[in-house]
Length: 223
Image (tube, rainbow, N blue to C red; front, side):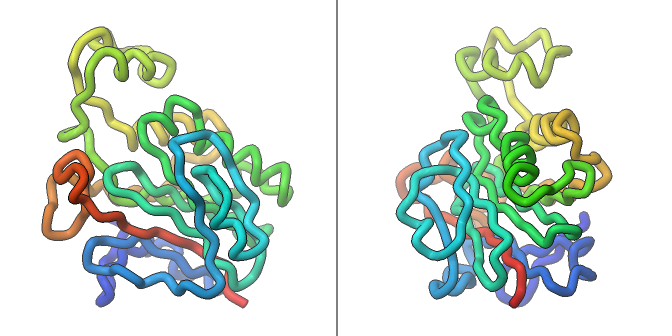
């Protein structure tokens, strides 16, 4: 697994460590408050396909589920408790993004839309982008009914069991959507960790319902 857990309880993508101007991390239940409150932007997350360009902390008053920025020193962050946190980096343009992506985000194609938006805003080429998918609910635990499963037909055309109760692999769905958007599969790092399975390390809404906390993931371009 190309992720390591640091002494603050934050997962980092080891393949990104050589990028000297980049800071990033995927929080756990052990890392509350690891992101600074000062220069950071977040959103009122609404399970949408809305993408916000963050130019300062005021973005926290916006609704949406993805933040993009090329501003130095500004953290963009999202909160999850089973949904997948996805971080993007464009080494060439020095631009980054943080995306909150559950099954609704997959249905809406939010991650692929973020790739396109980074192209529009920063001139990012999809083939230059690196992505990292952090801990989220795994196929082992994401059981859904046909009303949800049938929404995934475009992503999993080979599956004949979507008309009944089944399980879905959101991580694989994201990989396919990113690949279709032009992001090389080799450029996508995956934590492969299920939040519902590990109660000691992760918050999980499906496991703990209203008692579940939230984990913060973020990324920024250093000053």
